[in-house]
Length: 88
Image 1 (cartoon, rainbow, N blue to C red):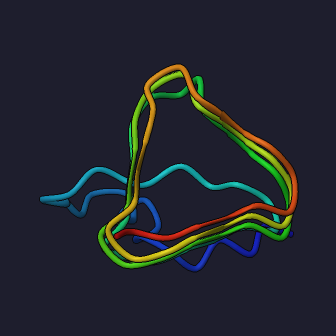
Image 2 (cartoon, rainbow, N blue to C red; image 1 turned 30 degrees about the horizontal axis):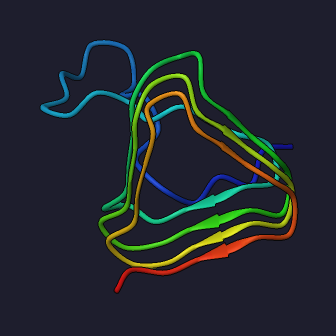
C-alpha cells in the first residue's frame, strides 16, 4: 500500500478539485506543501520530502533520502541513496 501522506487524493467522481492530485510514490512521505513536477520523477522507498520543497522534472531520488524544508532539486538530477539535503 502506498504511504504517501503528502498532497490530496484525487477528488471523488463528480466533485471538482482546484488542485491537481499529487503523484503517489510507495513508501515515500511527501509534505502537503511540497511540489513534484513531471511523471518522469522516481523516488525511492523511505524518502521524506518536507515543507515547500520542489522536485523538478526528470529527477531520480534514491532510497531513505531526506529533503529538508525549501529544497529545490533538478531538473535532470540524481540524488543517491541515504542522502540528506538541507537548505542554507
